[in-house]
Length: 258
Picture 1 (spheres, one colour):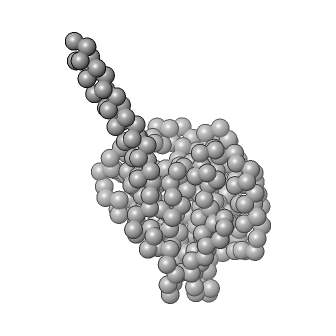
Picture 2 (picture 1 turned 120 degrees about the vertical axis):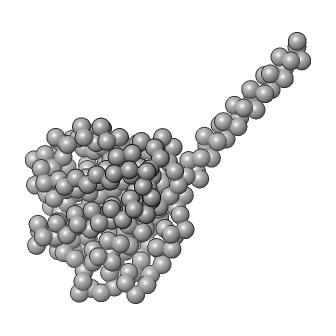
Picture 3 (picture 1 turned 30 degrees about the vertical axis):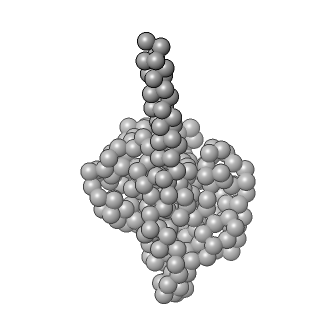
């Protein structure tokens, strides 16, 4: 009986250790960028990629096509910022200068990080598109963008919320800037119900895009995120809808401030 009891405890110890390893390693692996994301970091005839200590920039090489607004994007918590390079490249190809600004400590510290806002503020005030910057992000990053929009900063030309339930505790309904909400109907992290609850707090000029069958993870170019639901459409389809909606949001902001 004692031998059996000892073996039983050892078995559960192994099971527990295995579970811990899986729980730790899954997010580490899941949040890594796909090869397509890394490939999007290479400058070419259409887009010039610039890396600084605080952000990654994507700029149209044809300055005559450069839009009147730019796009400042914040990633999801723990996700490698490179995972959004294909989105940034697509907006730059459409003529809009784009920056991906990594979250401090990958966003673990929350949306109220003063260092992050100081970096973003410096970028907003720097010489850039005449019409200002549309701020946006994915999930947690969208929360950062929402808080920035709430400041009423004169250089903020619009807001894009992707896979996020923000604004949750900030009333942006009086804010007179064009806004976009992009939602996956199979999102297991920012559920459609939670997103709907934010409707009354969103800017009145908000255009909603519902990605039928889309989940949370495929809004970036990384693995399957813990807590998410399986999508019923391909990642390529979901990302194509997202890119179209973001580019349209940038064009609306450009026309609004033009």
